[in-house]
Amino acid sequence: MTSPSSSQAVLTSPGDKAAREEGQLVTSEGKQKTMRRVGKWYFGGVASSMAACCTHPLDLVKVHLQTISSQKESLSMSRTFVHVLKNDGLVGLYNGISASLLRQMTYSTARFGMYESAKNYILSTGQEMNLASKVAISGSAGFFGGIIGTPGDLLNVRMQNDIKIAPELRRNYKHAGDGLIRVVREEGVGRLFNGCSMASSRGALMSIGQMASYDTIKEQILYFGLLKDGLICHFTCSTLAGTIATALTMPIDVMKTKMMNAKPGEFSGIFHCFTHTLRVGPSAFYKGFFPAFIRLAPQTILTFVFLEQLKQYFGTAVYV
Image (tube, rainbow, N blue to C red; front, side, top):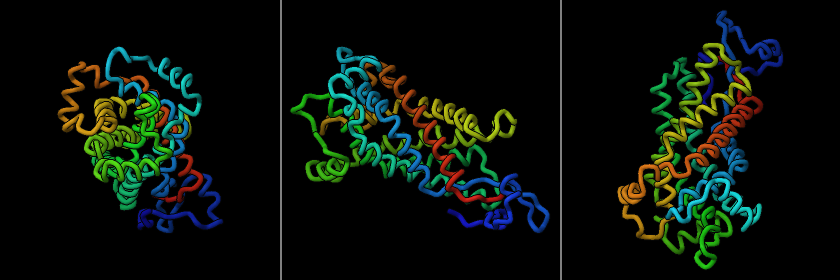
């Protein structure tokens, strides 16, 4: 976290109870400052991991729909959900949860950490962040976060899709750690970053759709006094951010999933994957859009609700 500058003051004195309750602080120079809660750099990863535990079954169904290779295999979201539940039980809906948590602890911790740190630094100088700054910072953070989180993302896709294929063809990773070791041993270290370019591009768009959109929408809602800063406001902002993020990332998400789940040599690169998907039709890039949205929307909502709660109860009180 950034240290308070001349434009910030950290509330530490027990005698500041009244100021704490009002969320205001008057400095010795007579300037009035407003309190905002600053989170720790790892809060985003923690919040995302908590959200992933709630939304994992929806993510699993999305992966199943995106890896369908023919119309003959096609199932609706509800039928896919019932199919998994019927054949593999409740545990089957949480297949690959360890990889999902690994992905959030790497990918989300990195992107939220970089974005929040940069945002807090800019605000500590007394400057305001405009939309262009938010897009640039969140996009960059998401791009690098996508690279860091690619191994966990690859394992997440493979472990979720494992129960869909014939038993003799399954990889049967025991958990994310076992998957990492086996991929390195059987396919080489480079294989862990298969689809890295797709994951990093998706990460950039996802972060713009989520973080930049959330902050901008929240600022406008509070500025025009449409809602007070609370749970309803957080829910509204995160729902809209989730919608924007889904629309931005869906085509890349489909290709990323296909490349990560592909057999060695099946795709020569991104363009090959693009043309292969396009042959099915433009709608193939939005295969599983509805489950992707209803998975991403709750994931986004829960992530920001949890993040706001972590900031409120465990963050640092800073006056700007």
